[in-house]
Image 1 (tube, rainbow, N blue to C red):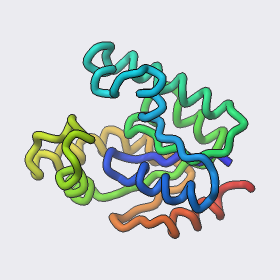
Image 2: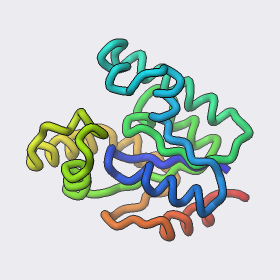
Image 3: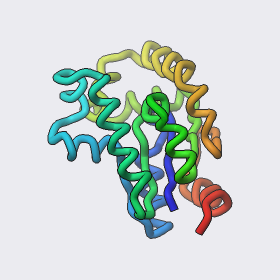
Image 4: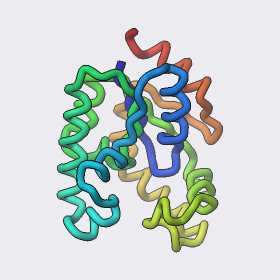
Length: 172
């Protein structure tokens, strides 16, 4: 069983992923954490020192390794993972993809009330600017996100709801 959570930053991929993987008793993988471990530097440093193109190549390479593995896991992908190379196709062909479609206003609230170091890209934005940035990002990425096998919409997506979807969609 391979499950990929897809969505914007702040949509709950990591938080829900940890909870649901525990309920399923399978490994949880945060793709951004795997990239940082592989590169031995933070995502922000990779972008600054090597550029987004390099980051996206590393991201796609690690995603491919996971999709080709025999491991069972639930992965929280990066917000842009599905938008580059053939990543979305690769995830759909090897597992179950679920788009967590959370309203921009809710994401802006979550990001503005979370620890600012966790999301340096958004840390200095006012809530109105942040909401507009999230809306713009959503518009650019929505065509990729909608290729997911399942779309779960709303600001109150919980582990039980996600678990029910996974049990319906994923082969044992």
